Every structure is written in structure tokens, then in C-alpha cells.
Image (cartoon, rainbow, N blue to C red; front, side, top):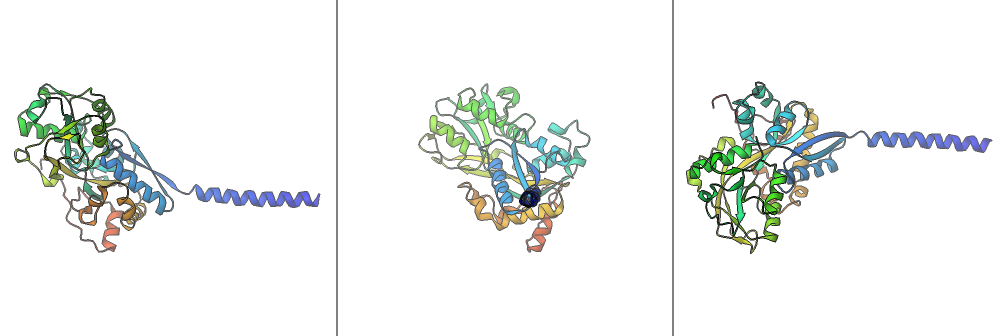
Length: 337
């Protein structure tokens, strides 16, 4: 009987210890991180950041989800439905001005103030991709063609349609706009169901590399001198080199437009959490750089605060001030601006 009681006590102690370990393991709080489709630069960036955070920040676990458009993610973050996100200065501008997908959203300007930036980076050049045998050699040839310009209601869609009109005079009525998300559009182009796909992504893009494995492609040149590139909303000019996607990429260098975007957080996320996330990113930058060949030129201290859209999250700002970073004035949009 004594031996039985001893064994029982030992089991009880072991059970308490195990429960303590389990409780410790359960301390990590789950944070939702939204992104656009796998294979696109924001998804690669967000998953790289998530891996670093999950490894180096105690009590915080990131879960990345690739679904929907960034314009919706911004609203979801402002409302506390998601925590971290891929953001864009263009989206800030659209919300403040109740434009595009926010035209009937009276709360949009107020919601815009509930998201704070952590760092900025280049999303990469907009690739206007077609099959080499499609007969499409210039943007003017897009008339009457099936073209994916971005997700319905997405910021990328507005950027592409605006620039297409500036470069050629063509509007959405002149082409067959394909109303897909990025995932479905990538698959549709792979299956030869659409003529042109426009993807903003760093070079080399995994999605476009996949196209070039099975077909000859052409990346269309964009006459950037005809565009109104606005640095205040993150606009940039870029060149996609000839042959960067291998022998199946036909044609020469392609000029195009690009954009500075950002990794941000809802203002509901505690300052201390965002501080630790920001710290983990910059103190483990080498691990992030290992995730893609283009990453060392994308997530950099030089570009990290190149454009502050709206405002920094207080947690990120505290980290930068403690580390002595030069913090430029934020680009704050006002109605009509």
C-alpha cells in the first residue's frame, strides 16, 4: 500500500509538472498575418518575418494567411480582425479620400488611422506578362484581350488601369478584365486561359519562373515617360532585365513601374509586441535574407523607413528611436490631397 501511495504521489507530481510545461507552451499568443498570394513578394516577406518572429520572440506566434485583396486586409486590421499585414501608401490614400473600394465606406478615413507601419520595402516591378506567341508585343495590343490587372477592388488593379490609360489611352472597357484573385489568375495564365497577367513582384518572381518553365513568355515594355509616377504614394520606375527568367523569356529589357509598400500592424496590437517584432526583424536580418535571392536588396535598413505611410506603429517607432535611426516625416494624406 505504501508503495502504491508513493507511486500515486510521484504520478501526481509528474502530472503537475507536465501541466506546468503545457501551460508554458500555451503562453504564446497567436497573431494573424495577412498577405496576398504565395509566390508574390509580400507573401514571401511576411512568411520570412513570421519564421523569424516565431523563432526569436517569446510568447508570440505568427500565422500567415494568403487570402483576399490588400484593400480588405487594411480594413480588417483597423477593425482588429487581423493583426499584421501587407500595406501600401496607395491604400492609405484611397481610404482617406473614400475612393475606389472605399467610396461608400464613411468610416474609411477614421479606419485608416488605426493602422501603423513597421517597415517599408519594394514590392518589385509590375510584370506585364504574355505568351511569346500571343501576338501581343506592346501595351496597345491589349485591346480586346483577356487581361488580369489585379484582384477586384485591389490597389494594384487601380494602379495598373490608371497606368494603362496613361500609356495607351485604353480603359477597362477596351480589354476583357479578368476578375480573379492573384492565385486564380496565376493558374489561369499557366493554363493558357488568359492572354496577359500583370504581377507586382520582385525579380526573379517564383510565379513567373514557373511560367517560363513550361512556355515562352514576353514581358511587355511600359513607356514610363507617359506615366505620372507619384513618390508620395510609393511610385517607382523599374527595369526588368532581358533573360532574367531564362531562355524562354523573349525580348529585351522591359521598363515598368513599381511601388514601395510596407509591413504594418493594427493599432490594437500592443506596443510591446510590435517593439519585439521590429527588434527581431532587424536583429535577425540575415535569416530573412536567406529566404529569397532578391531579399537582401529588398528588406534593408536603407529602405526600411524610406516612406512612412500615415504613421509608424508606436512599438516600431520606439525601437527606431532607441536604436538612433533617422525617422523621416510621415506622408500623411488628407481629403483631396
